[in-house]
Image (cartoon, rainbow, N blue to C red):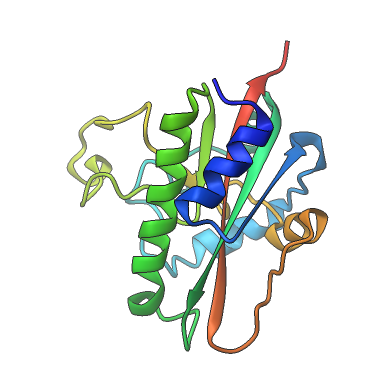
Length: 180
């Protein structure tokens, strides 16, 4: 199992622009952000096990993160004229999540992945077919589903949140170190 310094080195080796470790108690949750999921801009609301409402309440999601003591905050930077254009951002989110999953697997940590977007291991999600999740130990929910105030987390870590025109920053977490 990797130590925190090794996690940071491995994150940079994979291609992340920045990484930092924080106590999960420092993560700011804003339950009012759940409306962002309900607006269904990503198209996964109600049709993906890892997205609301199937993923759980805001309190349940917060509790999952707080069961861990530490979180590795991961940031990647991507060229994008319009960060709201999913045709531009979907490939970046896919790559970001692949790096996050790879880091979790190579780290040997028993941890929780929080992605830059909801799980996309199955397309469509088995929820749409009324079948159980095929990968309950590998799937992930996004930062929005957890109602994480990503801007405040980025500030806490000394990372840019708003990168200006033509660039978008994506974030994910690896939560680890179960509380006793």
